[in-house]
Image (cartoon, rainbow, N blue to C red; front, side):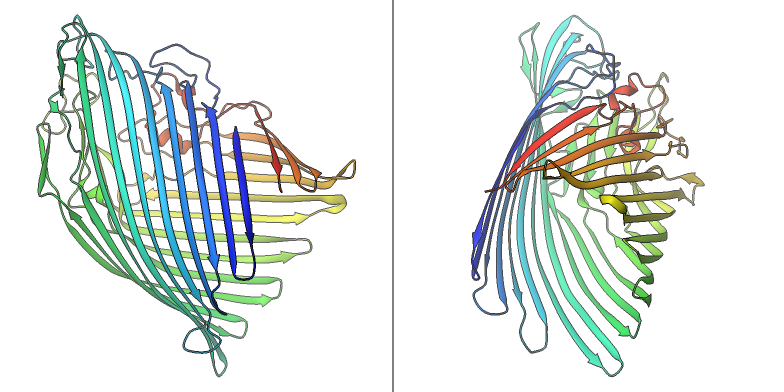
Length: 562
């Protein structure tokens, strides 16, 4: 259930807005059937969640051409879960509960100035600060385990393992943008120049308390690790960008050359760190790049235009990819830092057209992007299940994940979308998106690309008993995922699906609107490929229906305006 209240008011000089939101709910249902407490559980874990949010905004116009805007945002979410789907990698865990607290707070201020004459037509100066914290608590019960409370080895002890994970981020940034329109003979110019700077600070810590209920001992050591510990050194990253572009109009043709300069610096606070028996040096990195672009638009007629662009892209590794470490001997896996990670560069080409038709419009886009040193989180070392000894990370774990550079990657695709007004109050809209990704340097598919998707909507606007009514039928569909790199994991491949949703919106009163939605009308059982890839679900894992999307469900809301 969600409750939202808006308060707004103002005049020509001052405007104010306050929005308060509160939401409570439980776990989302799925199409799983098997319940109980096991690795093969298919029904969702029981969950209670609640959240609250605040948005406050004040706009002041102290003089002609000036506008000051102050914004405060706050969101706090709490979740309690009973973790009934257990892991086969920890057979001694017989029960687990968890809770999560997440909070984000953001302050921002911006000043817009539109002088009546001068060197600029518009100036925008902005600054912001955001803090975010995420705390996760998990309580595991380990039965028939060793005196050291192992998650895998058997014994005659019962243990409680209380796990606390704390992750905090601070982000501060400023931005400046200047705009100017001018004419030089037959050419019209719209020039945009600016700069942005951001500092991102982060730190995390894990703390475990292990209680052996059989012997009564309480300790801070588990599976070779002594707590509290940090998985990576606290640190910060600074990024500075300078950009400029000029949209040049030559009759029906517009050309927009542009250039962006980026500088990124990663700085750890500590020289080195130790996680259990694994020691790594926290690394600094400095990267810079120049990224040009050229875009063109040809307006063939008022109803038809064609466009194209070539863009050079740049992405520096983030702090976690370079210095982040997670090592878990009990579950036999690790995520390692990569101090040698290189920046990702790309060249993207896109062409398209836009048509304005009678009662509607149509857009088509084709793109082809080529990447060098593509940054991807990959399973870089593994030992098959059942092997006599692990062979990764000095024979310490079976599986090692790491952000690495894929030498050469290509992603290409097409998107078509449009909407039309039909007779008798009917309207329609649709979109189709297709993409294909390949690691060309390895001759393998790129697993991060989703299968082709289709969206169709048929709606009707009319009246019911003199009340405005809108009714919509929406079809969501996707192809099966058949192009998968299975060199490390034989992923569960998602079948194709088509899902029909119905919705209606009735204006009961000028200040009251009732919204109804019946989603997944035919109770289709389907998966999203992005979910499967994120959890690494293999074709042999038990209970794949645990990751299905919700079946048939109904939602209703009443909107009141005062």
